[in-house]
Image 1 (cartoon, one colour):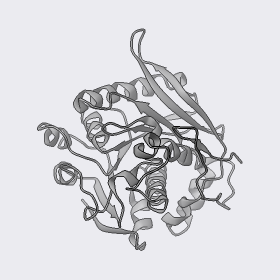
Image 2: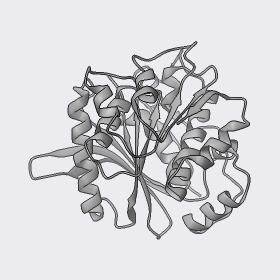
Image 3: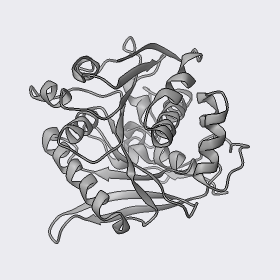
Length: 301
């Protein structure tokens, strides 16, 4: 089993405290079958999954002879085809702020790609670039890895990156759906984009009594159907990253996050991604949140 450690800015090595699941599986389908046959439990995803992970930092994705995207790639070990989660950071942030989340998902059998796009926007343009990236991967998955199941590409965006993810879906990105990590709404045209979304969307929000994002209410309000939203009690906006960009920039010092709540976001993200990739819906994840006191203000339509 691969040990997971991160080297942050300044050379500080951080090893998350979570252990490794006792679940045994040799394929993702075997793992999914077991999970779907048992009671949904989000807390089991606080542990690392059963699969080893190969991490490739600063992997260059060549969209054309002139356009190249810097990424971090995390490949899960099983040889069978598996879903791909594509992460997009938020404002003034970086792909590294989703490194542990991506590594964790890959340990549960889901390949991950964390993108570095212009981190001050414009976010509509970033959304359109993201749509092109997803279309490129859908047509040529071997440019990343031949084991990617192009029917199961899932988009994940934090903060203003959540707006870009929504715009990518509205622009026709061939994705199975999206998971928004405490998204922020940006641009007067965003409601129009949101109304065009037909793929399933799960919004994992921070506690708005702790911190609130710009126009977060737009997403549930304007996506016509197939959206679910839940908040994480006592979580801040920065808890939706792991490690947070503040930690990366300040040598691990972060006054606005706790590792406990960051891992709660990770477990919810893992439950949502496995649910969508296995069933095409978020029902399994929704059931896993319903009896857990860490989640509140749940709603869906």
